[in-house]
Image 1: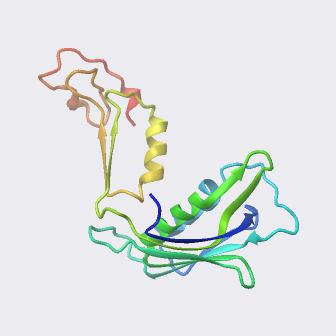
Image 2 (image 1 turned 90 degrees about the vertical axis):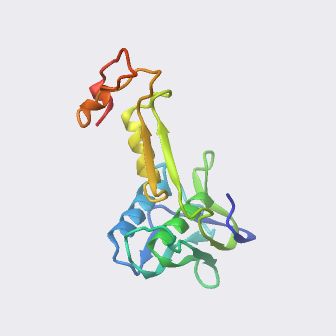
Image 3 (image 1 turned 120 degrees about the vertical axis):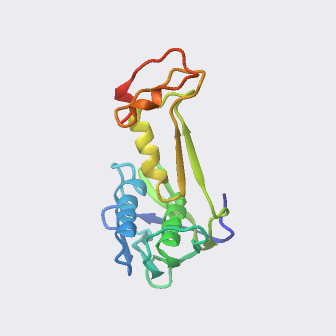
Length: 207
């Protein structure tokens, strides 16, 4: 969904993955892990890139949070404001009451970045920008249904790695009454359901 408040310009700015930096005043390990994840993987997924000469280049993001509380609870204020300043140098400023709002801002920023497969350039269109937003729903959950739609363990882990800081609850549905159940090493007795008349033991599917 679009941010609650979004003001965009008509210019374009480019990014150089080799020199781009993300700074924060918080010492939270969760936020630092998120910063590393976005900087090293999510913001720049393609290793082949080039930076155009004599064009504006975004230098960094400065994240300022008021609280570094790491325990996410229902009712937390996860709002944030994010704007790009281009008076002297191109920088993005993020302000949030806590680390969770800062991570929401990083996710929004990642969606602003575009990659041109022909020119191999990272860029952000419609700058400068000013964004104010917060999660639409206070409680967010995710169910992964592997009973009717088989998913490899790596696909499940990849999904969890991307949503772990976005949702409060994750449900993994790995068997139902009318499908082949799964026997796992951690919960082997889950296979003993009276409504099941046959089973297929696949211990390698559960880590």
